[in-house]
Amino acid sequence: MNEIGTVLIVWVVTAVSLLIISKLPLGVEIDAPDKAFLSAAVLGIVTAVIRPILRLVFVVPSFLTFDLLSGLFTFMIAVVCFSIAAWLVEGFRLRFGIWSAVIGAFALTIVNNLIYKLLGV
Image (tube, rainbow, N blue to C red; front, top):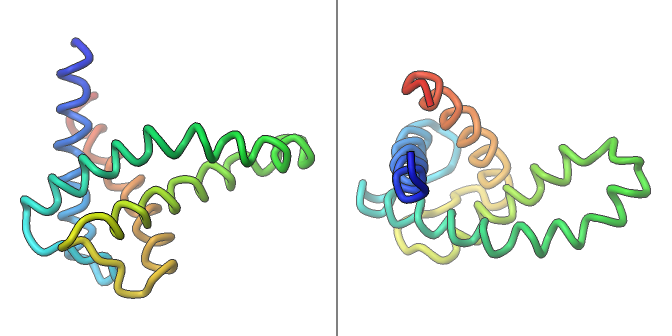
């Protein structure tokens, strides 16, 4: 599959995952399916731009902890990107602030992985 096909699959899977987690009592609210697709696109762009910057910020702490906490730093980056996307997209809200971002980022990872397994991707 080419890069465009991969990007489209990731976009659709993320949008569907956001719709699913918005139906759970996690504090992640999305007004409509079109807002989920917009949120998925913004989340992808934010992640592509912010992740490399935040990885540089976390290089020293990761090095100092002998890379034992690298998974935690990676998750913190996901939470920050999730929060920024919710802040940028009208109709995508985090009802309980940072706690909704933490739970939402975790739930998004799980639901995305389940959908990818179902699709065989």
